[in-house]
Amino acid sequence: MSGKKLTCFDCGQVNRVPYDKLGAGPKCGTCGKGLMSGKVAEVDLATFEKAVRTDDVPLVVDFWAPWCGPCRQMAPQYQAAAQEVKGAVRLVKLNTEAYKNAGAKYRIRGIPTMAAFTNGKERARQSGAMPKAAIVKWVKASV
Ligand SMILES: [Zn+2]
Image (cartoon, rainbow, N blue to C red; front, side):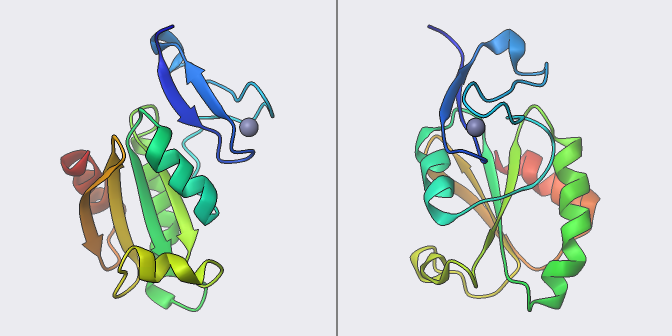
């Protein structure tokens, strides 16, 4: 069976999406939520790591925390960037306050920090808040 594996950010189910359906708003076979909605998903650490291990579509994560002003400022820019790369890259955010071991595990020194993953490996990392155009440029150069 051909296609790309995509982890659902809502229920954690791994879906296999045929290539010709990737751009057609594929939905999770288990919960019905969109797999490539262009919306930034707030993920827990377990779902994030499953997606890193499993997914055939590049994944970008924003490590952030609610108390971080620059993180909150960047959030709408990050969301706009996710919409722009919809269908090619999935953008998620991980709350390092809620998942405290994530910061140590991924050696996060400051937030916001974005990291790009393809085929189970981290390919690039960028710290500091950026506007949408710069995020899109970095994402495209990193995956
Ligand atoms: Zn689902």
